[in-house]
Length: 159
Image (cartoon, rainbow, N blue to C red; front, side, top):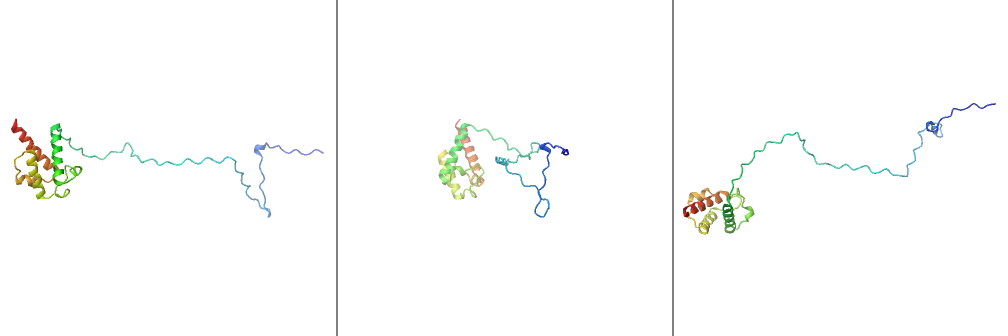
């Protein structure tokens, strides 16, 4: 007698029977064996700094007025005045910013300002400063501008 032929199934399409446990219940197929090659590590995410979108409008910031051009002689005079303040009042030149207040930030009182003005008169050969001049001096820039005007006026008289 001839055996009935079984349909041949190509090996790729073969279906594996599910394993049964002792109670006759079917269970999930056994786990696949791990391959010898480990998977490469996942690339680490690098945090990029947030950049504002290019289309975003920048807030309107008023531009500062252009600084007046000063000559080399004016720059030298300004340096001498700042050095005089620094030496006479025992203050570091780095702290002598234009808006630095003599009284509040630099802790220079009325008597110290009077001493500074007298030393300026001696060093630059200027006429005495009035009390009104003393009262107008609030910041380093006020003092520098006052002395520069006096020195320029003195140079103008010499010509």
